[in-house]
Structure formats: structure tokens, C-alpha cells
Image (tube, rainbow, N blue to C red; front, side):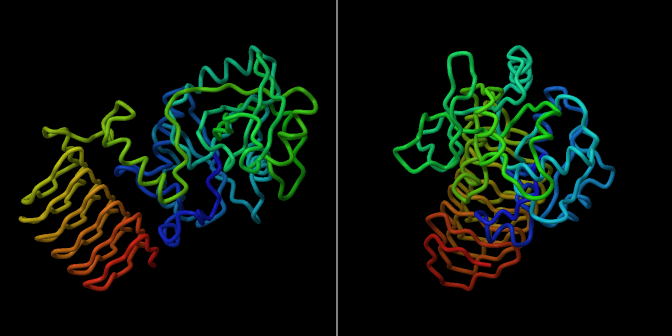
Length: 352
């Protein structure tokens, strides 16, 4: 699992927390990815670490999460995607077919079906694909009828894309792919996959299952609202209890104010009398004071929204404070531990 990036697109949240350790509806991204892998029979995973590796080591002191045994490969330098795959697989002594996943992708794609597709085609490498409306920001793939990749173009200019199918960040690889990856930094998207197209040994399989890359504020917020809205047809968090009208709770929050579903209120969170929460995630221990409104937003654990403040379509980081009477809107993102002054009007702000 590739989890070594700095998460620059999600700053300022990632100044204090690696992207994969951020919660999505009170469950960290990495635990959601590992849970999906475990559901498809994965029992061992190597985490390819780079940025803030101690956060992962501390989070999983028994080297196990979601029933998956964990080992770690800490990149000695930024290695890019192929370099990280090569370094991690060699460190783990991989000698059989293996799966690579991007640690910032949440998906319901059928991993078992992808592995079976790979084996029946006799592929050296197979890429999971998903269809998007605007593929130019991704690695775009064109395939023939039997699934062999005919073109792989990383982030093509708008209007030049060979298809609407993009690299979904899950790969099934044979150990021989490691021979194509040199020591040091290299890109699997820009170097390894294009060379395999020339050798006619790269295949790809598309899926219409849910897929989202949570690496931007827009998609990070959307992934949580998708869970609230029932897009993925599962409770927003595994242990969440539906108290009625699609209002979900974890543990024992204290709710004296109004909560409008779909919403998720975390353990020990507090919604004061005369406060209002609508279609939002209120993280564990977060507080919404009297007269405050949180709408279409996420408060990470320990965040505080003071009296009469309004948080709309925004994300407030762990232990951050939104001052009294302040208004956040238009996907404002407040970094962990940040104190926003009272009586501000912030539109699309990024504060740390």
C-alpha cells in the first residue's frame, strides 16, 4: 500500500496528520482501505511509508489493523510510485503475484474479480479502471476488446484523452515487474506502464463500482457525505447506530440541540441547546456551542465551533477552534489546532 506522499493537495490538514490517517466518517482512510482488502482475503500488507512514518507506527503498535498483518518499508528518499513499489516489494521479499493499492483511494471494486481477470489473461500487470467525466487529471487508459492496454497516458491535456477510463490506483503485478523498476526514484505511471504497453503485457479491467480519490478537500468532504447519503449502501461507520431519521451516533455523544439527518455524531461529541447540525459529521469530542450551525461539513475530533458561528460546506481540523460569530463557507479548510478569530467571514479559506 502506497502511503508515503505528503498530501500537499489536502493541506493544511496534512501539516499535522498524514493523509491516510485522516478520518472519513470517524474511521481513518487507511483502516477503510485495509478493511476492503481484508474482505477480499488479504492477510498481509506492506505499508510503503515516507511522510511522517511514526504516525502509522504509533497507530498500529501491534502491527495489525482490520485483521491484516502489517509490515513497513520506510523510503530512504522520495521514490515516486514505481520506486516505492520496488523498494517495498524487495524489502518484503515478494516472490509471487501481489497487489498494489494507493492508500488514498476508497472503492467498492471487486479485488477478487480483478485478480481472476489478471490470471485468465496471463498478464504481467493488470490495472483497475474507473470511468470519470474529466479524465485529464488522471492516468488515462485505452484498452482493446480483451482488455489489453493499447495506450497509457498520464494526465493528458484536456481534449486529447484516449478514453474516459482512468487508472483507479489498484494493480495486480507479477514479480517480474520488479525487474522493470530500477533502484531509486521512478514512476509506474510515466515509465513502467508505458513500457509494458509496448511489450503487450499490460492489461486493464473497468468497474462501475464506487470509487473516489480522497486526496483533495473537495473529494475528502464528498467521501464523507457519500457515506451519510447512503451512496455506498452501508452505515457511515461500522459501529454507528441509527437513532432514527438517518441520524447516526458512535459511543455516547450528548445532543441537546437539533440534528438533521443524514448526520453522524461521534463519541463524546456535544451539540448544545440552540445549536443545529445538518448533513454533517461531528467527530469524537467535537463541540458545537449554542446558536452555532454546522451544515454539509465535517468537524474532525476535538474541534470546537463557538457560539453563533456557522460552518457550511467546510472542514475543521482536529482541535481547531472556530471563533464566536465566525462564518466558514465554500470549502474552507481549517488545519489541526488552528484558532480562527471571532467575527470572521471566510470563503474558501485555507488556514493553519
